[in-house]
Length: 477
RNA sequence: GCCUCAGUAGCUCAGUUGGUUAGAGCGGCGGACUGUUAAUCCGUAGGUCAAAGGUUCGAGCCCUUUCUGAGGCGCCA
Image 1: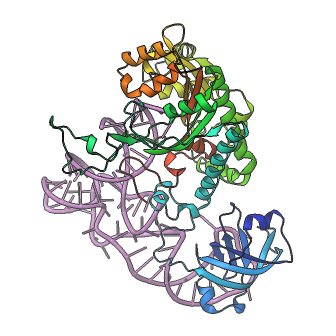
Image 2: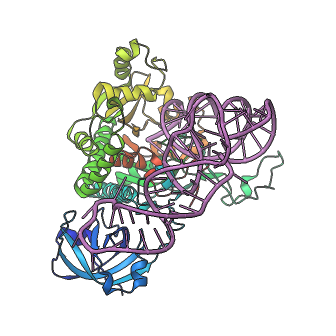
């Protein structure tokens, strides 16, 4: 059995004078004497002092960048100034030598694009190890938040036979011969002969199934992979991403907004408490990268200060109509700064959302009561006959992190809306039955997991907060 | 899918109005160095200038097409 101590724990309460065993990867090898180790337990490193005379020449020769080593030695107060304690090596073993002549990483700043191409090694860097520790923390906090409040984690299907989830292009799932698929007499592909006996796709949302759970268990949430086959080439979209979708019975749009705000603040606060060192590193990293930028292009606040500010202040809340009014009265609009026109009934563009969040309110904003024609069929119709009880949570830098709504629980209204929007009622008979047989007011939302991780870590590109990103023309690893 | 910008050594980049043999830092390799902190010092190798085609006496540089990447937009979470 292998026994070792983790660097994070050694540094929390250093057992000075004791013999310790550490294993990790070499971050630096200086002066033929000082070896800096990191083992992934945290962003901290441990300096090991190597007396060359104590070890075989061949062993010392193999110490190099990102070689993997095992060290046994005495933890002592450091003579140097860069660290409080260090290990005086008494045993030294190379667990995995590193062939530096062909190793793609270097002990220097590397571009995010280059590291993305070498994703098998990028988690060994300070930036990505911190990002993925925080990503874990957010995932854990999601489950903890809901569990502590009596929600049930519902696993909705990844392969779906629904043809009408209405959230974008889907990836087909099929075992049919792609070159010679069976065909019907009419010449169309005969999905009746496919694995499931019908056409199936990867899910774009677990919401409709989550509603089934909410109308029995009261409060449920889903947290799973989601797939969109859209040709989206942006720093905020992935073809495969993780989405969190709470769904609650006996709730209206106000309950929904309160939940969304409380939930997101909890996630951020959890990371502030649990990963201060990682966030401090990521904060510094952003400040370093902004040194050469014009003041206007820099963030108004550092990363950690931004996170603290979001947790400490109420989100602004406006209706779509009010938001439009604010935009039309803005100097930016009057000076013709907006590329897209503003008119009641069209969706807010990214530039409009950014103005509301970053210029007008200077904090997260929840916009509610959107025109019904730009929103999904299942959203509850308001009494004005024009809007639905939808809400979007907009964040600085990343835009929409949450989209949600109160669901239409009145069967006649739902049927009418489905007809108007050409959603086939026969394919969603089970969904309509939730209204026929003991329905109730209910609501929910979808939170883009990678987007909130992006916000918390300050990473500019969503592809750098998921270990192995999938996007158009990108499915490596 | 659309718009803009970019692609030169392993990485990050410089390369003048088109003109002789293609430049640096870092990294690699060889050597020195027992208190370093992006360690330092000496030496050394390393290039189909993204690909194809074109203009020209002559192209890393100009033109066309393709590929790849980044930023922005759309679609959305």
